[in-house]
Length: 221
Image (tube, rainbow, N blue to C red; front, side):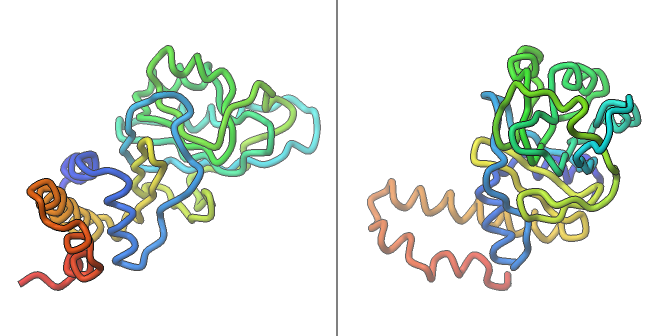
């Protein structure tokens, strides 16, 4: 399967459906609290991971995240930023403009953003825990990139898949993406049928019985 077709299939789904598929497969990936920080569109792509941490001195240093943006060469990247500090920004509008120039699809931060109107004004999607006005300068630095990071309790590796929408953010291991897509599409079809059944007048108690959901994951004949 080509990379483009994988991303197109993932983009046709939503986080609720992908989260359900992960549940059926007993896989981690669904998070809580990483939500859109403006009324931004869904993002789907592959993770470029970044680890932040506290700055221990006042010596000048390269601004966090900027080296990763500079290194982007494809149009499928989502910046996945871990290690945000309470009350302190780890994203802003200058970074957002740089990301747009590199065709980055969006940013997910386990932390806070400042200048969120700047990201909104250029239609750059930002997901995270909230907003602040307090700068990261001399407070937070980039420690590493391209390595596994912990996002809201979920370990995310470089090149894992990301889907984020109004309900939140889900990460899917690159090694399991086809399994997750196959089951997610089955779930979506089944749930569409359940909605149609309710609209046609069937009892919602019958339509939503546990056995109906369990049937989704039954082996296909």
